[in-house]
Image (tube, helix red, strand yellow):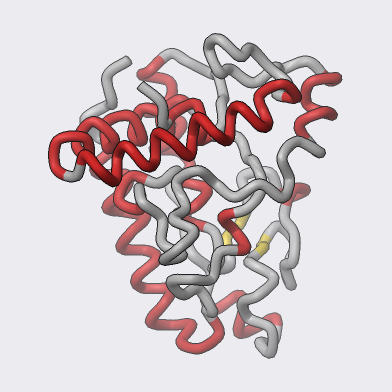
Length: 205
């Protein structure tokens, strides 16, 4: 499935917004290389995220085959360990959409490190192509579904529990990171896929 041309625009908007928030937040934003709490636990990624990861891995196999091979090894090991409990289709990697599958996913691989994480350096080996969930995690972000926000001081505004620990609700709100949900939805509509998967499946050829 081809990656929409405007995905680059989406990434640039998000990266610029993150840089701006980091400037405004200063020490309130605790995200640093080696802080890997958010790199543990399975989470759903959409078709746009998955195709971006696949495109990035294709580049990496040409520019750094050893690193790409290590990512491949970790992804296969992850699936060997957690695949039998995967609440979806193991062949396609698509997450199940039934209420039962969604309930099982709540407790699926919660402590497992992401296969893209280099355990030695604490770096993400696919950082340039990481999913949107990873790109917006940390700063205060208003969820598309306000009822799903956690660790927030304002309704629908959530942030990493390690960030903004001493900030007031007003300081948190002043560092809100805008997210172009509409553009992402437009690109997903162009792809014509509502399927979700997890990072490990997207990292394998």
